[in-house]
Image (cartoon, rainbow, N blue to C red; front, side, top):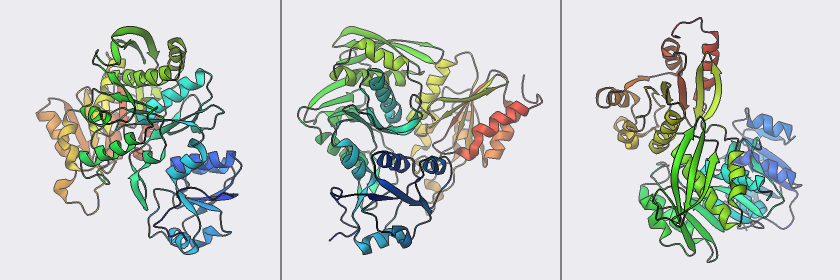
Length: 486
């Protein structure tokens, strides 16, 4: 019989009722929608029930229990899917074990119900996963291949982060974060890749990985899953990726800036919020592409998409049509609004490399305007001192940097915590940039009120809600009587 320490490797044969623990997570809610669309009766539970996921689930008429309790498993479901947020001390998890109800983790369920019968195209890497996944899914759709996907962001073309198409391809965002409390291996090890992309490998997720070597070990396991007739598209500009790719059991096609790579980025031209770039294949000009995203890093993301789609037999002109029609991803260089000539942009960037590339891209898109960076360290890694020095070089493209002090990590000594004040001092004295740190979001808004000028571009960087600063700032600018504006 099952115990909670030994999850199922597959779902039961006969299933009607599926219950999701932690249903209000972005991925879990999407999975709930996919399961319901497939004809299953779906219920769920969560301790954090609020928009937008509460609205999303409500519109689907999926019953959600507030809080976790043994009674949420009545009547007994045929299968329970356990979200990553659930701990082994959770009362509902304890009841699940006591009652020996079959269960799967989120990535196990995604693979069992939706990936295993399709060709799995998995996009992995420290940076660019969501954008590259979204580009690929959109391009496949415009090529008429009707893909399915599960992505960690809202794709502009579809207005959702999941889709069940009738085509043979499933595009999955290959997250290296751990699977569940009973399975500490990375999520992407469940996704059965036939074609995989690795965009980059850097140290991140300090709460589950001890060092970069631990992360590389996980990527090695992922690459080992590729079949001999599969394909790995690898960003060989990244030495860690090159190291992992060397042991691939299948064909490897490298991409990057080096003209000697099978897929190389040629000449690039930026125009407003679009990028035009030359694709060099095997040393020869292959095509010129246009993507509606700024920044060299997004050209590289698009280059990886070109490599995948070429492998699938899709013509360059068709690939370009998909890239040109790409409508972006929410929270990835997303323009939230323009008031009084001030543009407010929301982005998910939090790792130093992502911050640097995002700000460089925005500076390229708005070269003649002042770029104001507002940063909230929110992840487990960004709130630690491990990136303190790296952040000092990440804001080079910004003309003004406003930093929020992070919430401390309980139990971590002060010397191991990131300090916004120390970073601001470094930027001011060593980098000759204008920077300041703040304890609260209200303090940042007060500073913006007296600082912003017509024509400014404000890039707000956080992987969380940041106290709804985007909406509050736009409203503040809209109602401003002129103070601070010129």
